[in-house]
Length: 334
Image (cartoon, rainbow, N blue to C red; front, top):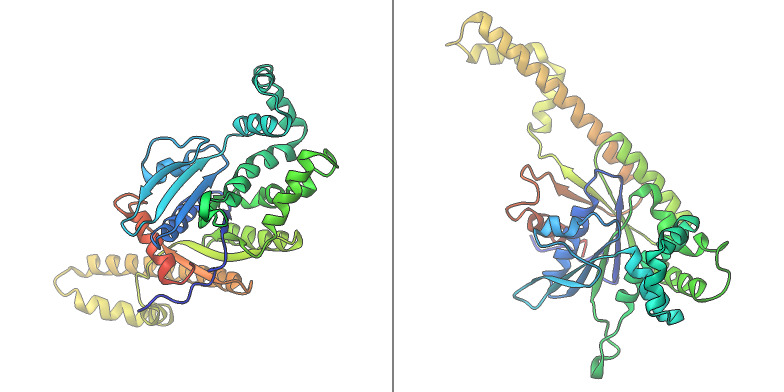
């Protein structure tokens, strides 16, 4: 089957968020890899200092400088960046105030921690400002109008604080009404609300992640941030056909009799216990399937494009991340 037409073809900045434990870092990595395999130069950035990128791709720890992770045969390149708030502040002070060595002194006396503690919005400006700079950077020479990166994928904070993180303009309103910080925040806000940006939310087919997804979509929309897709992660392959599962639920007695008749070589007591256990498991599976269908219905009702990624029993090892990248491409996310 040929891939569907890409639904986010015009997006250059993909922001990926989700409730903790839903696998948002894995989804961000899979999305970045899918873009890279199309022959693009892609930057995958993280801002939580957890080294999720290096763990996912099994490479040495990624630092504050953009580092190439892999190179595809078709010319695609994937770079990684782990944004460090202290390094970002030093760069900021040097860029706007030319502090030089004085900035290092400030760091030694704890000014960085002090500043980001009394003004949490400043921390977010510093973190996302590094991503903003990379996304907007242009090539030199005759390609000066061409961006360095064809796409940037940001592994953003969880849904609980992603709106505050992305809506930096509001966060620094009381701290800086004018000056470089405010100017930077305004520029970041314009990028975040651009049609070339999309915020994707990762969920599982469980009640809490689904509810957080619904809440996050509402908060993002209220903040005028561009909504992207919903990515359902870790989708279980069906163990039993839906028709067969329905027959178990509607006629357990008949199914039990049929199965028992097939167990002629087993004692009556053993076969009865075995059938009872199998039916109990089938019932639990049916309840789980019904719950997942209910939760999926809630996500579908949000009016966003929905993509599904399979559960990988062995994780992202042994090429698993490429399996997920292929799934996003085949479904037409990029």
